[in-house]
Length: 254
Image (cartoon, rainbow, N blue to C red):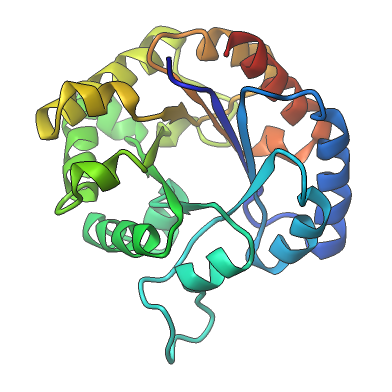
């Protein structure tokens, strides 16, 4: 049985002081978690502050982005090696906001995955369709294309180390979310695509989160679905109470 995994993406919120306060509150509320994998992804400038709080707890750290070189004249970027040294286990790759605002391509996402794996990080790879693509019934073709590019030249051994996050772009930060049936159907399609690329064994093992306006009110229904293994949470992760509530729901279902 696959474990549940809940990751909070704080996006461009919470500088070092505010991040420490939020981390303290989350840590206090999650002392009873035993089965669920939990991580938070603060802005890079706040990673060290959060690390000082969650060290020794079950809460892990992740970064929101990385560059695809270990070092060099790349002003403003951070490498996977730096992220690992900062105490992170996870790194988000290919988030729709990176694709939209910073024009990240499927090819770039694939290269970042390779660098993350080589640096000992677990890539959380985001895939998802826009509203216009869904309305044109292109969801499956868009998702399949993103996955095939993401896993290009990735061995099955390394593919097992990747976490996927399905995030319908039209449901991120909008208050809208895919119905449970819609979300589960896409997750099932993702597993089928992975089986076609690799094996049934890998498809059954890999963790696939749902991301798109997940909150305590809809978390139980989503996390109860057969193919949904967790949640990548944006807005609801910025409040300790709502984030902890979702984690506790996952813990009971795990």
